[in-house]
Length: 81
Image 1 (cartoon, rainbow, N blue to C red):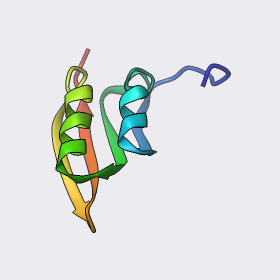
Image 2: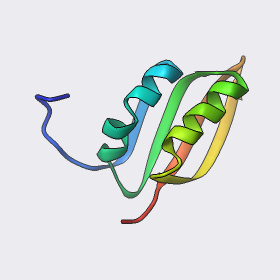
Image 3: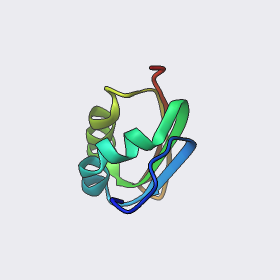
């Protein structure tokens, strides 16, 4: 990511295990434009969903969770600046 060009996007998606999503919270959050959408997957079970939402809630709102075979997809909207 250090070599990447900085920018904000209307949609950012990451399919990485929950612990890594939490570790990358600052980087992922900084890439989502105000009022943009963040999609996070690679999250297994309720506890991990709660941990991911807790990590991203300072910058995001309107969390929704979809489930398939025990795996979760969490979507959220970036708070306006």
